[in-house]
Image 1 (tube, one colour):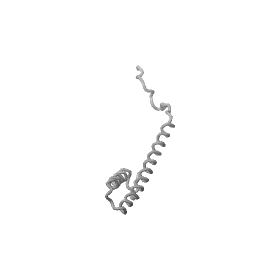
Image 2 (tube, one colour):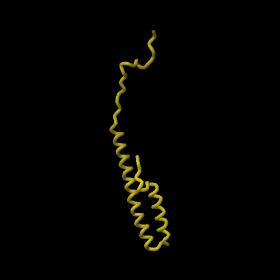
Image 3 (cartoon, rainbow, N blue to C red):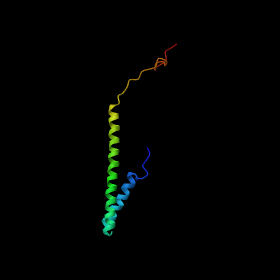
Length: 89
C-alpha cells in the first residue's frame, strides 16, 4: 500500500506532536511561536485521529469478514485415491 508522501505517517506525526507539547509545556516560547506550535499540534492531532479511525475501520472490516467465513467440507477428487491405510493386495 502506497503512503501519501505529503503527510507523515502516524508515528512521525505523533512524535512531532509530543515534541510540540513538550516545547509548549516549558512556557518559554514567544506568543507568536506558541500559537503556531499550537495550530500545528491541532493539525497533527486531527491527522493522528484520522489514522486511528482508518485503522479501526480496517480491523472491523477484517473481523466481519472473518465472522462470515464458513468452513467448507473437504471433498476428495475422483482422481485421487482415498486417504487411509493401503488395501492389502
